[in-house]
Length: 326
Image (cartoon, rainbow, N blue to C red; front, side, top):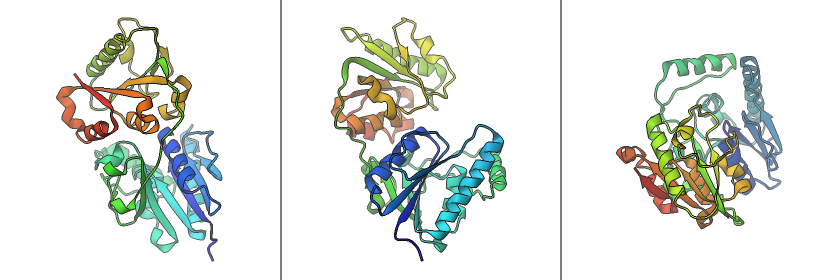
């Protein structure tokens, strides 16, 4: 006999996924009818809407293997004994892939759901076949007692087993419209400092280093047109090892580097910029949904590669994100 309380299990592998999981738990499952469990490989202190959480420590291969196996066993134990729901962002990670394709969900009182994963939610991305990567996933899955099934479409939004899709932009999200529920990111109180500007950096996949440097130079040029005293922050991507921004900043404008692993959505209110400059990214969409007209957002890209991001431009237009094509 199942308990009347439903257990929601959120699988997360990035800071953004932690952030969105929290929003879904808060907005849809904060009553006493639910228990929320976060299973994540990214440490987070913001767990107030989760009844418990499991951290998959990946500091070593041994820790990663043991902790992944334990997480899998814990989740299976819940699914087999309780009314439960699983929430994943896409099917590429091993745990997510296993519970989507391999674990017999149909035998138990379990439903499977997707939650927003940035731009990936808006088009049918096909993951390129990398023999080494997929062999590694299969072998690691065997060590952890999990099968792995490759499917290049890692957001199968129209699969019949999908119960609900949670997204910040239902209008543009893939999947049956009757299955899509809207997550609100709106932050009604945001007092921008009219002297503060944020540059968001990183290494866009489709651009070469020289192209990224050109984008940065144009951002800096635009910023220098502002009058008055400015405080400029630069938040690079913590995984970007290039020095593209330093090369671009040959004018030597004063910039405070605030690069960190926390997503911009978590930290922006510490710096309160009135304007954000960057290349096209999910982060710009998220910020505009959070602060609407309280923040101006400028996105820079190469005109010669405009068609590569054809799915994004209508979203930017809808949200009022300014696009500068070079």
